[in-house]
Image (cartoon, rainbow, N blue to C red):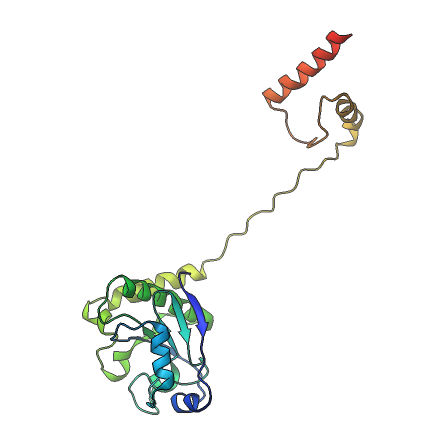
Length: 226
């Protein structure tokens, strides 16, 4: 994950203004901010202004900041007070879309991953992903639509979702070597250890040629001393 998740939830009057209704979310709606401010500035502006317009999450190149819980509505879709977009969809704003460039590319990639994780969280498929345009006809997310990348972005979200769903392969536990020799070889093992031919470790493992040479050298040296 290339971004961090930050919660800066609205409270008090700001929450009552921007999010007056409880919500059982059914969709995710993707927006472009149409300016070049980072997510922290977007959230700060939404928090302090007197408009009822709001959204749930702003995502830039380094963080995804959530301001409204997913069980509360936000007026971001432009389809009226009781519209499905405003009352049943999670609003996601992708930052830096006015000028584009590397920061926007990174923000969009983060948003794709974030949206895929939300889809997975709710057990949803790609049919739950909407553009702002789908609800109100507004040309938003403007950069994605103007560049003709709507299908590409949807495909990237789908690929990320499939990646998240892919089961993690279990790694077989590697048994630790035992220092206890078999009973039938215990006496010989203890003798070799006592003589210094073996170091008392890993009695079950095979002997390499170089290890065998060292053992033979010790044995021959002992014989020559006699």
